Length: 247
Image (cartoon, rainbow, N blue to C red; front, side, top):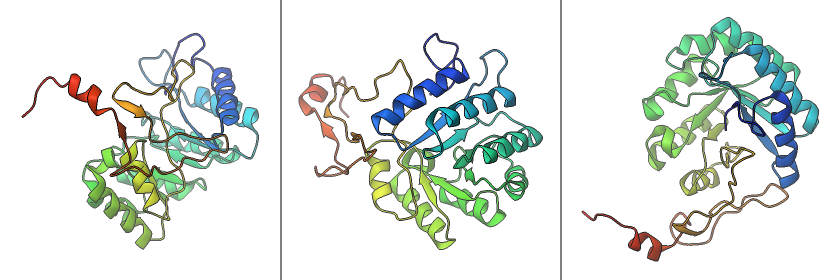
């Protein structure tokens, strides 16, 4: 989850570092930071973002892959300064530092950085917009997902589109649909398991399920379910008892 002002949460660079160590101990092989954004006082801040990213790299060492999602608050020059710092810290990718409506800004940024720029995430237009990002040179890694592009079918089209241009295409977000997408491609490297936070137990099973679909082991492996469909382990009795309307 994003940086906050909560005691024991993600209020300081040291908080991010301590939580990153916990995640590595649980088996996570890669960690993506979401730093501070308004209305947090003083956010956004390139300097604070760099401090958090540095603290996490120092805490987990050189062998854990790290990424940054900068929440699209920055100007071109701010994004460039932050991206160059991430290069020095050997981060794996740089995500959404600017408003994604400006493709030319991302082409400008990608041209000047060695760290891969990933996108788009929030731009409307499904696989058609993502084709424009590729041909414009606005990204080095493409981004798709069931909730990003409107379902499994346009997400599969985006994966194939990226493959045709020899690009990695990361599946954004968690859940059975995105897990299945990742299993259907060879050009996606990471499963984004969830928005994790020190005060939130991501492994707690919600009441409408018997079990979660994406349990992680201590080696960082999430295995595909062998149940029917997408593999969700629904508690149909609970769902039936809490259905308020049928159409």
